[in-house]
Length: 410
Figure 1 (spheres, rainbow, N blue to C red):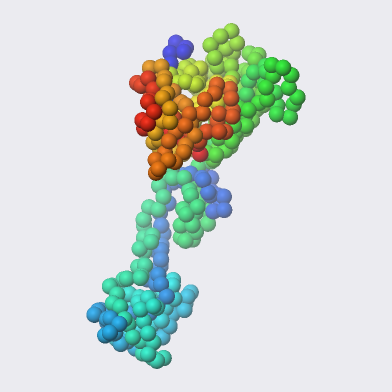
Figure 2 (tube, rainbow, N blue to C red):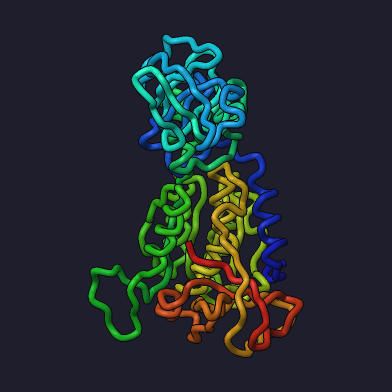
């Protein structure tokens, strides 16, 4: 049943189904290490933020109704009865006709329910204030618990922490947060022609690109990339590298050796290591048709094409969802898509998805996608492009000026 090609949608569904019982462990991390980590269990606020009514401006805390009708020509006249300094508890209590000077962030005195901005006031003397503009109740005020309410679910399980989220945790006094452990993703590059970047190459040999692009892509998602080096096109060597990776990693990504032919050794090596083995071989995608997905003793394996561009594209389509799921996220995390107009006529064979490298350019408030043409082994087509224009399987291309979906690189 090998090489019965799947659509990308079918492939992702199969990946998801086959890791649904994957056991994801948790760990507590310090806030300084929390950025990009995924929440393991819901975070519930145990206190109100702010813990008191606070001013959002410099001015005077007042009882709002004392200012109704105030204007420059007929100001409200209030008695100044004190001042609340930043970081101090408000000790003064105000009554009708009174005002208290207050700074941004200051605690409102008891009975006050609004703050008049400083520029709309005129002190007549040390004890008398003229208010030249009315304020509504709770104007220029953040009420107790208005930012974050006690008992509120601040973050749900599976949420990826951003910088502002870490700040919210700090505001609540949370210094450690329970997150999913980062999965370890084994990375293997195979091929007789592949050499390490620091090695001299002879005619017919190329330096290893895939280990570094895949490692970096894995790292960008927050997982831990574990390189297992370059493996020659030899059944026993591929089997040993896979076996070593399966022992210590939560998933394995191997590039090269997945095309149909006499050197098709990855399939045999995977199937020799345990059940269920290869689940599908082949995607209805260009570039990247000879893609493998397998599971060996509950550890998922993805076999990417050897050509660097094909490998990166299939990583985006199939491996990124897998890594996200292992991280505890939804599979779509990090997929930034937009629509742009095609700069040229683009053709494609019906029945398969086609991904074209494009550069994005803004013209008169519209985005245009300019194809970067080149063969699948040319890494420069990736460095020169901003994303991948998708031609769906049901289409035979796009005409110039048509809107098309573009997957933008992270």
